[in-house]
Image 1 (cartoon, rainbow, N blue to C red):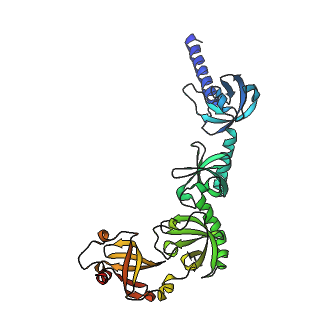
Image 2 (image 1 turned 30 degrees about the vertical axis):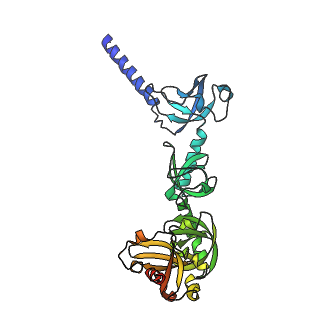
Image 3 (image 1 turned 90 degrees about the horizontal axis):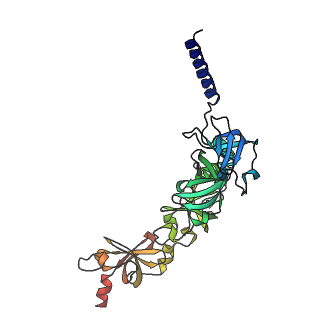
Length: 364
């Protein structure tokens, strides 16, 4: 056999050996994977681990343990077989970075993924407020609940340290991303119990509840586990700009049930009807032609609304402000006390008309 042929065969054998060797290390190590390995060297700068990759994996001392230690030998020894968490994939030198302290967290991620797949409800503790939501702790991991997924709709200090029942929307260990929803968990619970609760409620029944959410259009009141809507128009007989003018989160209130939708298991509530209708009370208080004092509550292009009795507003038309053409915004201001004459008094129709210029005439 010629030397050339021998050299060619040797090259082929070496090439095949390299191929088989590389194939033996052909593992697809990915960030967040948990793999088995053996400690092969303990050094002051870090630890080297055989995990079956092309080169030894590197375990930095900061990734060794969550427990303080004076020497790495306090935690591991050469020959120890353990599970390791992949922190970084291969660098240019083919080395992988691993962690021992994160294995516990990785198993918690696996558990959360299983809970998400099973659509189970879990408990999360609020630890801080951030822009757009709250940070929570669950299974020793940090998660995020967007404001839109909170029962309250907006984060507030009262949530800190509270435990919430939540559903997992997204869990990704590689991105360290855990997104949760309280509203989804509550919706499921509400669906389970709403029918039996609504069946035991009646229109005009007075019930006690807790303010759990405040919005521009009203407030949601927890009634025995389900949320009833208290519209802004049913909060007070007096004009209010926002429900938060009267209500606060967590406040206990007694309300009257206005309507029950048994098909949708929804209830609407009233707070103002817990008090006597001021339009009934005012019937014997005033009469046409009487001059009284009131407070301007609102000004419009066509006139002003004047509070003449708690919960009762009367209209002062712009035509009744002066004999000449005026701008009501220049003539009056909100909060101003005015002396007016009752020109029309029909409390049954909830209409009371006032005049400012008639008072001025009487004073001339």
